[in-house]
Length: 115
Length: 119
Image (cartoon, rainbow over all chains, first blue to last red; front, side, top):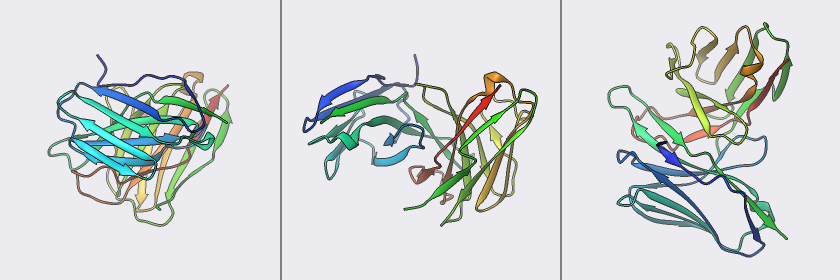
């Protein structure tokens, strides 16, 4: 079982739809949860991050973390064609004693928002 | 926001040659830089982590003699793919982090990536 599972899609929705993107994970040690957006042939761009369980809202984006279920979600309201991209979830693993922590990424879900 | 650049954005080289990719943090000092590799429709796979002035730490399965990483200054890290082979063809992305706190890794900014094609 991979540490982070994410449906690769593609997920196709009409403009204005509410989009739900999800990841599950197996490592209960993860503490920080991030969502990145990656346009084709570009580097990932940080969208949101959350610590531990709960919700966080930023404009049209809401991130949810349910540590008991090892499940995180990103909701996009009023989706736009410009939201078409690959969305990657990422989680931080602390390496005790090494002085740094690393990100473990999901495969990414491709989202296509049609006008 | 913090900007990370990579050069070149795309490179084609012949099998057996070496290729150097530069990663620069443009408006902040990066104490830690990360190098990732991404195959089509696959996740970002961490290759190595480097702290300025010290040797890089490679992930399991990554050949350190093949992928040479140098982090000589707080704004520049380089990845050299030595004796490249077609299977090294991939999208290489660097990332830079300003803080030294091992507990908060979300402040990690990614470069635009370099597409390497080995013929």
